[in-house]
Length: 572
Image 1 (cartoon, one colour):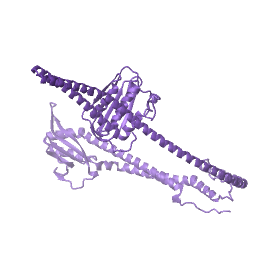
Image 2 (cartoon, one colour):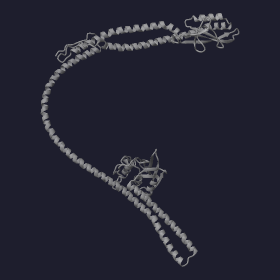
Image 3 (cartoon, one colour):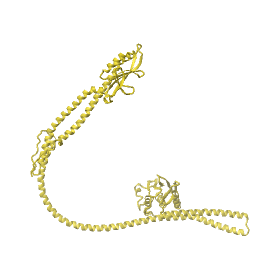
Image 4 (cartoon, helix red, strand yellow):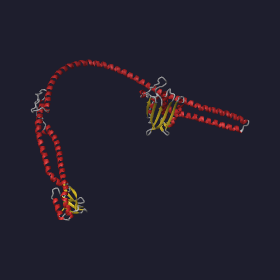
């Protein structure tokens, strides 16, 4: 289908040539304005500098004459000198004052002591200038001293004289140069504009119109003859024309190839229809297999979920057993500790009973004063021993009761950190005395907490037992230090340090994993540090950090808030 070309040329104002012209001459105009302004400014600055030099040179020309006329009080000569100076193009006024600052003589426009512009009349009297203070009336001046040199060479300062000029003087001297610069810039701009228009129309507008007409004639049925630009040269437009010719040739070749491909495609589509029919049957079979696999996967997931629940229950049971085991060890230790004060109390009570029987027998048969005194002394000693041991037993029972309540119930209450640490270490002392290891505690006094003393004590006991079992195992000496101090505002830091074997770097990041232990089969469950980590980061709302060096020891740093967060479920 043939399509007749039509004139779709854009308006001249929207053409590339016009846009280039606007862009280039906008830039050129800005540059011209800037350069012209710089030239005008330089010319103005040069002229002002020259005028100021002329004013400065007047000191040598007129200074001696003014000094001589003032010294001799010759007003006629002084007036003549000032009149001659006022006729100079660069001068708008001259003012002479004596050494006291009083006006002697003035001519033209001057500035008085208050900075106001004044104009001197023929008699030298000053009158206020009524014209506006525009830029052209801005004054500048040079001040010179009036110095008279007598016959002996002595100098006498007899006054000052000031010569004035203004911006209008400078403008009058540069206005002709300004006019030439502006005319030169306008002529260059117009000439360049005209030349650019001719060149753009010849080398850009005509080839672009030819290319546009060629593209307008192109269609699928009639790709047309190759385009040949009429102008000479080898520029970007010629390259564009060559690419258009190459494109039309490629389109012709492509149309032929596509016709062949269409035929081949029809053959392939027939084959695809056959394959689709076979594929639908295979998809149905595969869908049935996938449904069977899905059912098996669902069954397996249910079994895995049940197994996971069983493992979690087992882990919770082991954690409870771990806590009860620790509590059982504590009970055994406390029972051992109670044995000593109770045994001492029993012995004291028996001794007191024997003494009472002997005293009663002696009293019936007549007793001496010395025997009464001895009985009272012995009874007092036995009573003191009995009281001391009963108080010791009562303290142990009270301390154990509080620890047992805290450990088994995990109740929240207000407590003093130093007291809780001391009670838990005292509860462990029966076990620790059987070892060669020394335990020290340095906890700041007055560290009040509103938290869970039972879980906190369990953390402390777990870390001490971990140091004894793993860090100091089979060592003849060792030390465990517990420190407690205030950390940042509202937080407390509890540090447990031992000087044992340390933890190897390759297992340091696994020590909090459940069931991980280096003494598997030796009675260790691998849950102690896992429970410790869960209590600190969960119930107590804190963090736990460990530093360890093999051969030097291990340091656990626990940071917890003084006020524990709101209670939440935990598995400790």
